Length: 612
Image 1: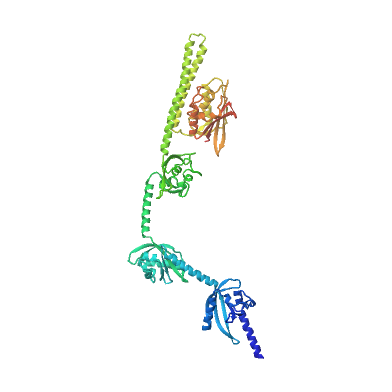
Image 2: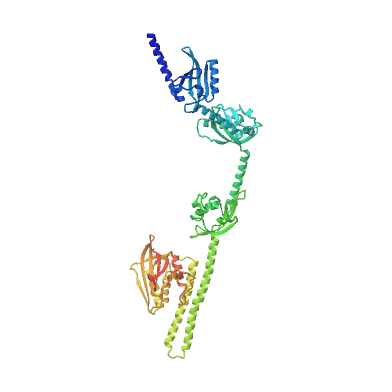
């Protein structure tokens, strides 16, 4: 009884171990009928014990012949180990299994005990690895680069045909050699240090140049790339290399040619700027770097942002035309901008083409012609001055002489008129005035010429005393019906000016008298202190009740070549002299309406001088 209980207990124990084993286990007869499966096996195949008893093992084999081969081995050897086969699950999924099978006798009957392991993932990895190695062989076999694989000891275990061609050994000869067999003795220590850095994961150059000794003893320069990879399930070193002996010589020759061209460009004492088709600067010589040092670095920037300080392409750009036409184009270009030029360059753009004849950009030749341009402008201004003075003297002196002639003729006519004494006095006075005007004209021409030739010394001037002197002179010259009112501060007003300031004030007063049709000439002078842009200025205003000046003429009257409306016989050079004098002092002069919006009520001439 006790033995029966112990047997029953033992059976229960083995049954539990069978059921919960981590290895898929099943029992079947030799005909393929399933008798029992543990939990792991049920999970692999997807059948319940009841469902499994309704099927035959033969139906689970993708290839039924595999089942027959397995049974043949089993009957002969009574066991089968690590038999890999493709099986089918309940849902139709095909998987790889590794089977370990043995014949057992249970209750006098031969049964089959099967241990099953799902190796699908492992099998897929193996297949992928085999495909990868096969692809790798196909790839390196036809590679234009030499490829050598070495094991952990540095012994070559693979070499492609290109490696053999470059080094001069056959593939069989390379297998079993090491990299040191192809290295010059003096280089071994250097490359060993590099190899140790790679092994110890220290910084090293993956791509480097290396001299290889060929089978015939000759040396060639190669470019090496070293890495590690997996080959036949082992970690190996892989070297890819190509011969660069001829390329290196060509590169050195090219660098020498490039340096020669750079030296030539830098020797040119004009600017050289190379642009691509999008007007990006790709090269400049030293002249350009010096000329535009504040914009450095220049390379990569748009030419118009650097050379013209613009955000858009210059509409007058000859480089654009050269790109469009494929021909040389030239233009005189102001800098730093057309709106506010301080200099000029003669810019010529030459089309730049590659070896296929395709236009890839332009080469700009930049010649600074500022001195020549300024000389041209000065010469042109000199001609304009000559024309102006010629016209001025011909017109104004003609008026003066004509007035004198008319006065003399009238005196001659009046000799027979006993009552002409009063008229003679008027005519004589007219002649005196015309002579004064002629003298004033000559004086103004002389003073304007002096201003043009040499800058006047600027000093601290008492503005009030200069104004008072100009008033006294004007009143003495024009005694008839002139009323000059002044609004001057009691304290001294000192401004930065010179001795010709009197001439400026005097000419403005004369202008207010001559261009006046009122019965009584009235001029109001006001001096005040104002501030503009944090600078203190002395403001002098001359308000008259003359004929006034229309808006279109307000700026023109200060120009030296202004010729209109001289019928009044005034000094055409007077206001031009005023402008030259005041601007020479760093001041400003302008004219406004005496009463805003109504020019017929007279003019207000305003002078600003910096307070001293």
